[in-house]
Image 1 (cartoon, helix red, strand yellow):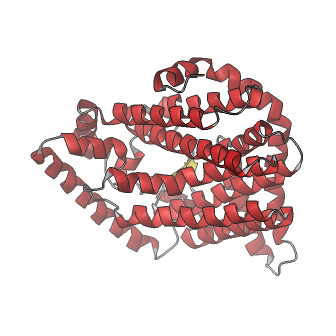
Image 2 (image 1 turned 135 degrees about the vertical axis):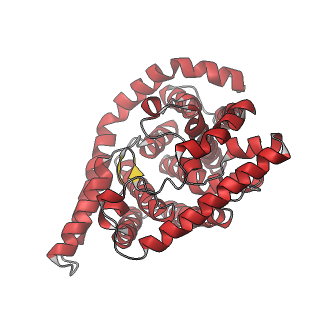
Length: 374
């Protein structure tokens, strides 16, 4: 496959077949990853927890794991390991640890973002409250870390610890500029590189470590994972502006309704008139005020399932003019174009590896990251 953005887009047409074949091949191992993740919910036995606390931990854990997800990080790890010549059992435990780490971040992100839905269901914080959601997220962090320690590879352990730190940095960077219309592209990229791409890079590099390849080859595989993660997040942010609820599988415009400034809006604000920028800034100021009120409310009585939709601090009618601006100034379309550029870089990173099923599947996965509809 050529490294050009155009060929990456064309490759997306063949992506379903290429990925389906790869997922069938690694399907049994992915099923083991799922089982291993659920086994971790039983790790609290004998830890001195009362039956009520233990029950809450299991209920929240099962609620989050049952929501599923694409499980793209375990798949990425397994395909990277296969690319580097490894198909043994260690990849199941490390892939499960990576996905548990990702699950922990989702629990914490929902608390930070005041989100009441996750993957079309009520978020854990909306049912059990912020404090319990955070603590179960901490439990998942701990179990994921223990699984990597049990594996015993110091390189994997170092990558894992570094990734946790980088994701926390990304969350803090995002909070630093919440609801601000003046967010720069550089700041936005620093956020998504840490919050999203660091974990996909870690998953890919862990697979390479299992394969016992050279440091230079490890760096190439990690770079693939990083570019993959950037393309995936850019497409995610574009979809939030360009897809309808049925195609997306969740309410659209969630970022904007929560007052988040992502690349489609950043590009739009650079191109629109001063009066239009002022109107968007006023809307974001309103979102910030309402979010602060919601944050204050959430420190009181714990929310229940009836709290759903509260995280949408802006109404759809309020954001309609902003959506029109983003469309008129090609904010989402140009975000997609940037995603395709990252796909091309991902393909270039693993170009030196021999052609084969794993390499073709990874290239197809990168195409999918930037062309998916949900």
